[in-house]
Image 1: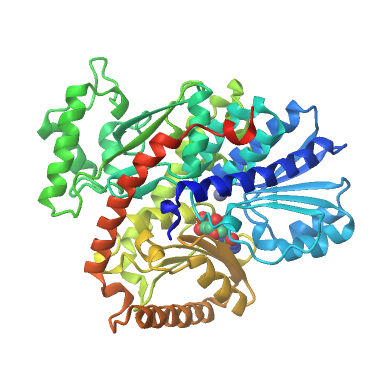
Image 2: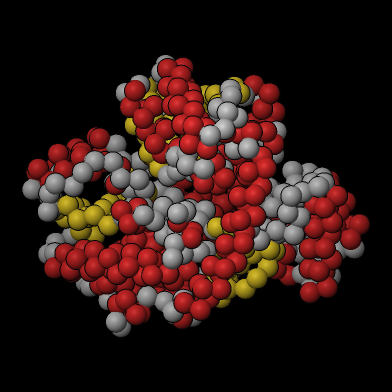
Length: 533
Ligand code: C5P
Ligand code: ZN
């Protein structure tokens, strides 16, 4: 059963088990004497995870030493083994390297905590390794690294309830907003954590147009950059967006000459806008023209940064530009650092924009096979933005519709002299049983590289020069998966030819989501009933 359909009793059981694991880790942290070594992932989820754990440690009067990394390499583990100190905490990473952690760290007398949500590779054989990962309980998506870290902080002290806000931001940063049918927003365990944040007065949830840049982007820019939802003739076209707004009678600027944003529109203007968008989507025969709304999350205490989605992007921009510590300071409301946001974010956006323009121009050179699409970008897309670029390209219409359920792989030069690969797969293809994490980690190991991640978003590093062998290996694996899927369904068609099936599947998911939504609304009370305080 796909995870978003997890029955309430099952979810309760999972939470009870996760909370029990979190308590064990919380006790170890509270009982430890000395500075705790914290290593976290350099994206929004990793930064929020680190802010949660470091704040919780500080509350206990504990010292810590925090570093951000883009990936956990063997040499990072070796370097940690040589450091003093006995307790290492890995956040939002580590589950893919359990064997190395035990071989090189536990064997040196260290104790290790891993709080992660990535796919597990290796086996736990030592009691000195404490591991908390929702995938062990069958949860693939709806709790992030920061949600896992939050459970630990929550187990350390009820005061840490307020850190739930950061767990919500981390989940949003990890794209855990579910687009099930017409419903868009956090689901599953994330929604339980969200309830904590609402109860703590940190977040307000409402329904709205789910377009990025609600509070910071001029409306025409927000529309131009909106690839999901896609607005035909307007997405990817600034002039199209300006023209559209003129046509529906919404001014771009307010009476003071300032750019209006989605959050400053009047009710009447918002209605014109949403009706106009739906009309454009109808005109283009879009499958579900009205699927443009969703939950929007207002942050109530982040020094004027109001939108949780935008805050997550700010954290990502910090992490990807080696400023993870700035991200943590922002998470913890250190006012001084808020003045750095504009410059940091603009630089990051410019870099992504430049890469997207290159990619759009060079889409003709994408290597297209029956099973996948491969972008060989070399130095044209910087390593620190490739994952954003490939996510956007995969969601948007850079490729024809026929390709939308095939994985998209981008290959770029890494600063370690290797090739970094970032790959994405549609929700529909994941639902049919394909896991990019499995495919990519198998193919990477064939060529002496390393890979991991999630079913729909995975990455790898491979030695330079091994790209062709890696692609061949991916092709072989994907072909086998496709043959197996066809055998199971008894069809002779390729996996990407099941258009009708896909549509039926989506409808079904929509219906189920509606049923589930009802249950969730009635059920969500926050985590207090699991922690007892
Ligand atoms: O870098 P990117 O965002 O594409 O990575 C997608 C997922 O794959 C992330 O969850 C990341 O942690 C994981 N990954 C990995 N090993 C790599 C690169 C990425 O496990 N070498
Ligand atoms: Zn994460």
